[in-house]
Picture (cartoon, rainbow, N blue to C red):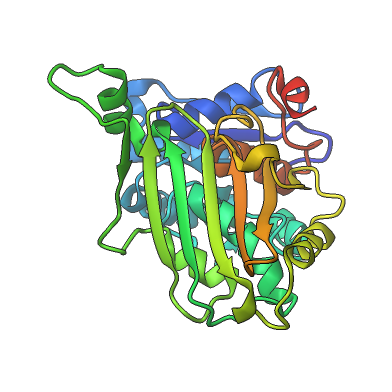
Amino acid sequence: MAEGSIPSVYIDGESGTTGLQIIDRLGGREDVVLRSLPPERRKDPAAKRDVFAEVDAVILCLPDDAAREAAALAAGLGGDAPRLLDASTAHRLDPAWVYGVPELEPGQPARIAAAPRVANPGCYPTGGILLIRPLVDAGLLPADYPVTVNAVSGYSGGGKAMIAAYEGAKEGMAAPSFELYGLGLEHKHLPELQHYAHLSRRPIFVPSVGRFRQGMLVSVPLHLDLLNGAPGPDDLHSALEARYAGSDSVRVLPPEAGGKIEPEALNDTNLIELRVHGNARRGQAVLVARLDNLGKGASGAAVQNLALMLGLGGAERPAGEMEKAA
């Protein structure tokens, strides 16, 4: 990118849910130029190679195998290769790629800014990692603690087939009001969650989907007497608060009044809220993260990472976000 020029970006997979959301979030910005290909040429390797060589960054919104192929194509360009931001699962544990959670630990934003290849995080792991990692780092949560992560997402996180089932777009398809899934305990987000939360014991992860389009809750129940030093709920809150002080995207808040919390309050934002609901007398707590699975869980995180990679003025906040977040 020449000094003073406006960086250009190509979204490989722009017609998918995440790609469309990224386009919406970047719309109207004057500090980045979006490039595109005609629909009939988007799977043409030669056309992709040409546009890859012309832009500063490529965002991969593709299935895992296609993302690997696109990354290999970019690598073949040598010095003309663009910087890559991969929204798939393909490269999240690859040491050659920097994990795209700026709030992961001190210094992570600088690593993302300097990286030629960044792996955007999964929606479920974003909530789980941001809840668990600070407590492990602070020595409160043992790395071998038997962690259970329960989560519910809006149906938009399941891709086109699930969206069609819930919105009745396909004749004969139907979807339940609520559904547990991943009960084989092999969900593809599990390795990412364990690795970046610094857990030595494989957690149990139970995802679910509800009849609402977007929004997410991630919860982690804890027995406080099994933690180091038997901390109280306030100690856990303080550890989270200390870790994310000054963050633009992560808010550590008091427990929701009435002991209830719904999943849609942060829709269309790039925010995530963390809370500790606890009962000190019973020695129990539940950590809760609320986020938009399409925002901080996908396209919002992608725009946040892109801003770091290209030195832009920060993540775009869609119209109405300031009012919702206030």
